[in-house]
Length: 363
Image (cartoon, rainbow, N blue to C red):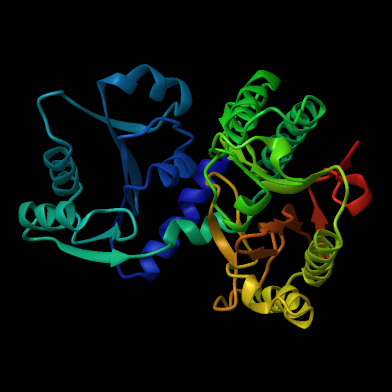
């Protein structure tokens, strides 16, 4: 049994527990996770006795290559996706059809319900997401590869970093270098934020030059073989101010202690509390204004979240970011982010880019 068949088998049990006869998978990443198909605009109807992937003629050859043996329903250009979906569900003689409420639009659901008036639609959330929480050995290896690509690109870009380069130029260089090294793409548009702009957790790169301030925050990642990495570092140029030393040291200590707390059975909110407590004790509690981290995998943001409102217990195979930050409007901010694998006995930090204070100061 392939890993995709194993995943679909587990999902069938979840669909049965949800009281449905079948699940219509409309989230493209979930379709990839369950079949290996890397395209989009395709749905998977998972029944108790099998599955059918609904797609269109653009992907016929790709589907045959990526999903050999999978039952396919290729709609003609003249047939709308809504009509093809309804026809497929009717042909399967489903009584209760579960849908992915987090993915399907209200309009599509309403229109599908009208076409399937004799069928009960059951809204579900997270059935596939729960399976994706814990990565198997192959997935972890792909994330490791994505980490390696991101780290190589960062090292190359930092080696060529000059004061006259703009935030956007550095971000563009990161994206280009990630691809040149061999990754498919960046995980997301890189964040490069100089000085005061680093107080914006998701600052878009601008024409501001690196040399305009003594430090720059860089948040980037690589997508390799469908899986992603996500890292953040602060790079310091020139003289290190007392304030920057203070902020950076607190963030680094918060991250270190949070990582030490990661192990199976610990609640996500408790790991968040460790980092948040360190930052609050240092007097910056109100300046840490986001959750501690999130899962990574096929998506750059997926479960589990490390947050004060998430009770999820950590389990071996989960891969999460740990990224505490302090943001001081008008001055700047600091965030340090690593990718961490939960293991049977604790955790493993998958990222290795230098982050000690004396290591991030460029000569």
